Length: 264
Image (cartoon, rainbow, N blue to C red):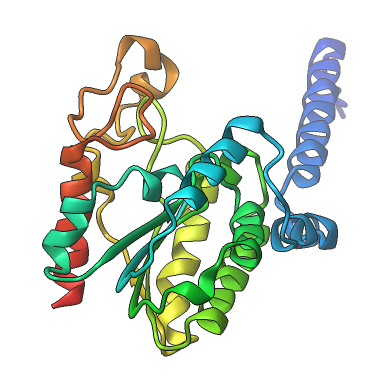
């Protein structure tokens, strides 16, 4: 009776294939997202939720400049980073006609810097009925974990409510940023999902969201070639300045229109 045996080269190929599959499986399993690894580190959270003065000179200068023109009266307060600081007063006035506008935005602010400012500013001088808050993009750039950013934003709105309990906080989701508007996109989306749910946790927060496609003129990183070669596909959206982060007057008009819808 004949005995059939595998050819030596076939056995070697089969062995190599099994080794490859085993190594691939080990690599794949070892690189699967781990809930334990994604758990928020207590120290990262502490960094973002602990009030801290700016560690960058220009930000401190902007804080001093804001403090020098701190409003004597403000029915509506803009609070946050450079996206708040750069918002034209006339644009905000179009949403809240007849109201005194106070801009407490500081370019370069991280969440922890904004918390520090709330302890330093003469907040008792004013009693706003509305707070428009846009904050968090600098923490994305600093690579703070989304859960730490969420904890910091929560602490910020709680502090605002503690200082001005009569005020409603309109909290903007973090706008897109980058050459094709997809820098730190996974983290941004995670934080924004959290912001969208915040009104269900409090009775004084209103989330302002749903403007990503409009603000980016529909050019938000949908083309894979743009993601690979951003310098060859620069954004041409008139709502953003050349850095693809800060907004033009047209960009603020978009935000104002969205906020006006929610304020009516």
